[in-house]
Length: 138
Image (cartoon, rainbow, N blue to C red; front, side):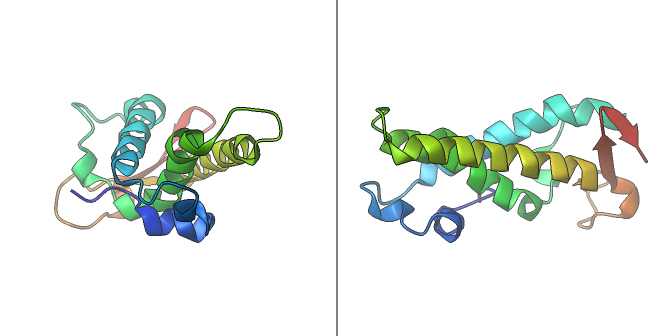
């Protein structure tokens, strides 16, 4: 299964990330995707009016690539590199990427999450549900 992001998405944002002592963050991408899916269940799924469980295979994964890269950097990659001491540049980067994640996730919710509810392989406008300020918009 492909994750929503991969190491090349991290290097697009942070070019030196793979040259700082850890050469790959493969398992961290799966963790980031699981985090995004949990966020979606909490912040979006219940507000769509759909029944049953969110089926992550019906999401348009590419819609979340930047979001996933931000969460992998924030929660998994940079903390592994941090010394957690004064003057540690990674601590500032962690804060930065956390705020980028929050902004990107909010923008996706406002724009509308692409979810192929009927499983036909394409996302019709009726299947793209936006959430604004805690209310459902159709």
